[in-house]
Image: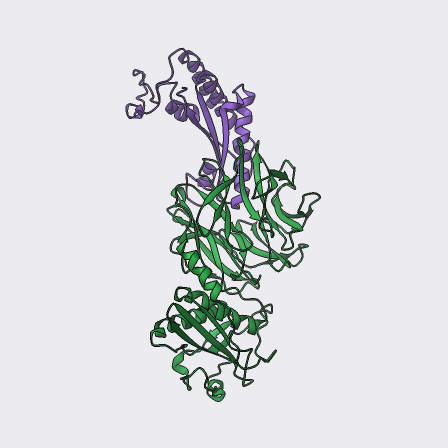
Length: 172
Length: 443
């Protein structure tokens, strides 16, 4: 309940932010910092700039997690993706590559297939919320790119993920 | 380039059999039945091969060592140390003092001689059945360039192995694999090729992109593999000699992986993912488009041809979990062959056609196993935190695979094991190693 409420607030904030001029993310990440937070001025490209990649990654949430050998979205996952879709519908300059990943408990080839399923679940969901399919590509890394490397469920749970990686943002 | 040239030269010079050696003895008592259960390794004596020319001393010693290493490495043979020898072999042509070898319980005696003349290295050897007091088979002679000395040693060992076990050899072969460095969250992967015993490692790609599961062509001249060079998994074909590569399959919006050659060396099968669904496809490496072999909403992957090219074994989770299936090479009705507890993946058909090797996941452990092609007589050969990806030695008697160790400092190592489950051992590589593919016996 609570996370959902938070997301809705954020989305409301986004709708307002959408009036501001996008297109100044890019390479000036050095000015980004951690994005101050409490009531400071919006630093373009930083996490408190609602049109920034940093904001998408940190505040909206760039990833959803999956149960063992599953590619069905969880309620928490859907809530994150609702935020992603709203953001993408607002920030139309962006495209995204959705990366599907698996934990190390599976054979290599199967995990590539499983990651493809997970990435596709996210893509289909975002499309169902109105994001144009041609803005969303998918790739599976199988078990090749874990972010946590302990060999137990605490790490595996974080590795079974699909990450929406923004690209473009600077249309020609 | 240079390496292949050398190998070809050596190959051309090899196998020039020399007449005049003693006659054969077809089947004496000296015999190892390697399909039988636990056996006592057969003791052999291998006096350092004689140098017949002054500058051959070093290479003669090296060749002797490689021949011994090959035989001992099978777990089927035990070398009697030279310090125990009563006889010395001072001349390759001299008659053998069988009593002296019997006295130290050497069941097999291997003698050899090495000569270097200009750019030609010649190795000859004889194998004796000590207790029968007779030569086993006739003497053989190999010649090639001096750089090819390891291959000649492997050929000697293959001949010895073959005569004693009645099976084909596998020492004169190569392995293509993925060389790995770095921790699990920063792993660097590159293709590498080496002799079966880990010698002569040569890198085929750099580590700028993830590479997976290289597979040899049926004659070992090419390799197909998966690379993320474009940002997406794609199948590449690499010429081992020139190290030139080209992408084979590059449809926008798809991912392709898990390729394997058909026995004809022209067609391949592989997995292609589109819209989250993974199926098996076939194509000719010369071009002409792809042919879809499965169409199920499940994950179909890891296809492998039967040696006669008529069938394909693959894995699918159409039943709800990964299991093994066999279908006709052109697609069509598939029959499930795995029914035990747990999940089964990465099936590979034995070059002899009789068995299928696989990875099994059950109760939090991984196993390499073999079963008959109808699924009968399942036998698990290994157990660990993570074993996967078997590949067959050319004679279908030994399997190499990947073992990944547990935890944050975990790494991948190649291992081999024979099909009775004996002789589990790591294969030495300069860095970590995964996804081995064993070549056929070199020509």
